[in-house]
Image 1 (cartoon, rainbow, N blue to C red):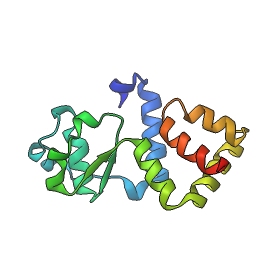
Image 2: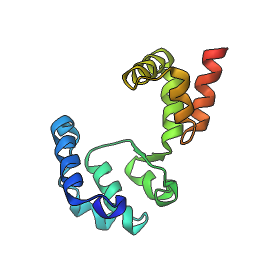
Image 3: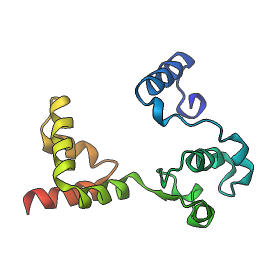
Image 4: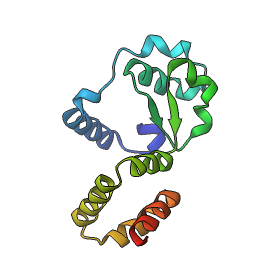
Length: 136
């Protein structure tokens, strides 16, 4: 993480400590022996191995080209762009997602409209679906 994000070691260590403290049940270990069995992009095989070990059905990634269906299907895993995932969740639980978006906006001292403007930079299709639901 440190090299990819350009973060200093102290920030990486703090981030890992916080992840372990707040999401300890999601921390995956023991996946290393699975890495050689993975056929996706070599630089991201550890991600699929960890997903398989953790019995995850979905990998969320902006980099779908390193997680093609033909490399994941054998393991019962699929890769989704975060936007696609958010749209799926919204269609299944619209009221819950709208409540969470309102809470997130409030926590950041913004209106829902302002939050959606910010999200539009990375997940514009999701914002379009939410906006249509709000105005329709």
